Length: 544
Image 1 (cartoon, rainbow, N blue to C red):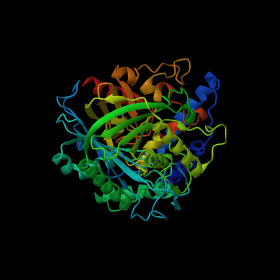
Image 2: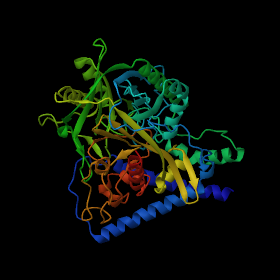
Image 3: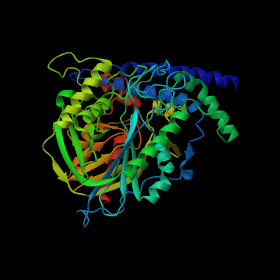
Image 4: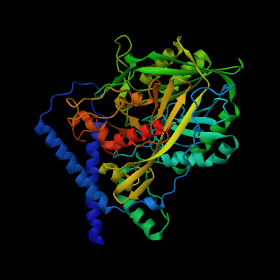
């Protein structure tokens, strides 16, 4: 037993070293660079390094007992996947009318987040990142929508957080289940804005050394006991999580109670000057869109909701400030200058960030001042939209449970070590994580994909790398999601109902140590994730 423990410790130390390697490129150069020519020999070498890394880390993972939460596929029971609107309508129902309610809650109020009991999310670090300062508030914002057809209400909650696992989303649904049934809520969706400076609600940014060295022993103790005797360590704080669930439920209930009838309008504005993509094929749409709900009761505020492709990394990925980044200041501008409620969602933003030099060639300020200015500028952009079209009162939505293989052995090891807490299911062929996807139609001309992670934009909108340019030398081989939904304009609601990492076209899934990968593959489940997603999405759309 002692010899085995020594082996485990030695292998775990090797894993810690590998994590150090992973951290360096995570904060590497932000500038867009021309993709250099790479020879077949170089490709072969880096493909071999990928095999080597996965082999070494896989060997480490084999020594670590699985968490008690991992279950066999035969024992898995699917619960709290929304029913959606059972019937999809092509045109609005007779006498249809939009109703929309809005609410928000602070997720920090009453919480003592400074100090050693919490962690700041956003970048893997060997040194634990405990919060030292709160810059602005972190919130949950909610809209509840109904088209008056009698088919039910659809809810979207968006949280200022780095990530939220699907099993935590289902916990929120569980807590609001009775209220949802009483009020004919057919779809509850929970997304995050992926702030790299929020209190950790995902778990991956805890004390890595403690997790890697202690959690294997904790897993073994719990397995022997047949129950959770000791909670494995990660970046989550149980009290904070419980409060987050409760205030989200409260905000949903308030939004539903405050629903008002009115009209819904849609417009877009170009923001190319503020966003940049760090990795080919640079297929971003470069737009902010705006849904604007105008209540019939003129004494009630308008509600705006929008998507952005810009990562919330204005304060870096290794800091200890707690901030909601630029979305907080977008809302502040819109509230002050238009007196409207506001909610932001993320779009397809795999390797995107804010442009550092957008304001008349003046150097972009770093840190707090920079993302405050960015938020204000984006708020101005939204407020500048004058061309709109009315959206017919029609909402269709469907959900589908999907399981993704954990091919990437680093993610496999992180899951075994308790840093990646998504529900895992053990199959005869390996380990999968339980997730879900969604598809929604608004009016007669807009389609929305609900994505459980960070999507490469070309998968959605086309323009992906060809066989001549991709890493594998092959074409992607699948229709874009825009082609799949047909004539409707496609929008993406990213990091919605889960955070499974990056979703990269299989033909351009690069070796982790190749510098132009921008560290994407380190935190992707694997090369087949995109195929699993696009095939499930195609099936879901075609079934309606």
